[in-house]
Each structure stands twice: as C-alpha cells, then as structure tokens.
Length: 121
Length: 113
Image 1 (cartoon, rainbow over the protein chains, first blue to last red):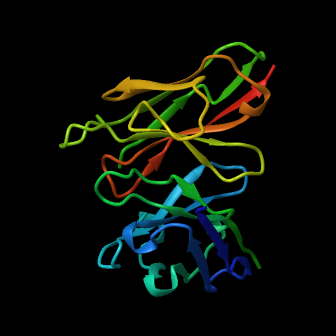
Image 2: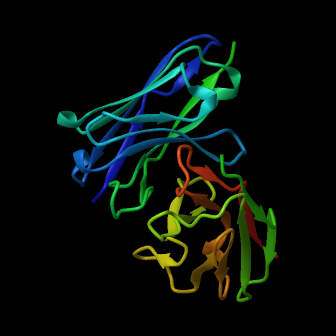
C-alpha cells in the first residue's frame, strides 16, 4: 500500500523558515518524480515544486522561486521542502504527491494527508 | 503559463441526476508526443485530493464507471452519469502538457440539491 506521510508544519512568523518532510512507502521511491502541492484555507490547489528521480532537475512555481528548496533522499525514501523567507500568503496545507515517472505514469495518483503551515505574527 | 478555467464553480445536483463540469485551457493541451495530459481530481470534504481521470478519459483504478472524461484540444468535460451522496466535494482539472508549472482549474463545488 502506497503511503505518503508529511510532517514539519506549524506556526511560523513572517520571514521565518520551516522544513517539511514526506516519508514515502509502498512503491519504488527512486523511480518517480515527486511534488509538493499546496492549498490555502478555503482555496484551490496550487503546484509548488517537483524534483526528478535522481534530484538532478527541480522546478518551482514563480511565487516560491529563490525562497523554497525541494530535495530528496532516495536511501531514506524521503522528500523535503525547505521554506525560507515565509510570507502570510504561504499559509496553506502542503501535500506531498507522487509525481509521474517521466515516461508513462501520469502525476498525482497518490497524495499524503497534508501538513498545515501557518505564517503569522 | 497555461490557465485552466472551470465552469460552473458551484454545481447543485439532485441525487440520481447527471452532472457535468467544463474545463477550458488557454492553450491546446495536445503534446508533441500526441498525448493530451489532462487529469481530473476529486476532493471530498476534509480529505486529500484523489485522482479520478488521467489523459482526458482514462479512469483510475477503483473509480466508479459513472465518472467519465472527454474532450480535446482546449475543451474538456467531466461527467457523472448519476450523482450519489459520496460524490459531494470539489472537482479540479489539471494540465501537465506544458510544465512547469502544472496548473489546476479553480475547482467546482458539487453539492446535493
């Protein structure tokens, strides 16, 4: 059974930092791109970033470029999101999602339960 | 970036009746490989999103056959043949032909009338 379990969310002041983690199991983690998707309270879904299987390619939505860094540890089946210079508009539930394999498998067949990040003074 | 526009944004439906959600993209979603990368997701209240449909019309495993996807180019539709109570939630289309970024529609909230 595929499982994605996020952790690391919480309350942080504007300008602060937070590191999210996602523990993956039930599939060959190193075979798939991985993504972070967020959802502000009462709002829709927004893709944030993704990372290639070997970590050699990373992409970000414009609004987080230069502030967020996605990374992974294939030996530990883990995905991370380092968030710096946080703003109120970054307040959201952050989901870890299994992305595609770059060939046949389309993205987002599995999602975690999400972790809430609140940026407020 | 490709803009995805859904309509309606709110969809009250009587149990047992059909429902239809439209999704339009600002650019054609036909990829250079000939595929069209348009997915549909369901998000029930308090839950994480769940993928229902991939590549326009392919149902994911476990998705009831009352859900169907269709369309081409820039116009796509998700149809529910007979709405059940468990279908309440928000539905999103998403494209991954032209990325980054992946882009989602605003969401359509389906409720029981």
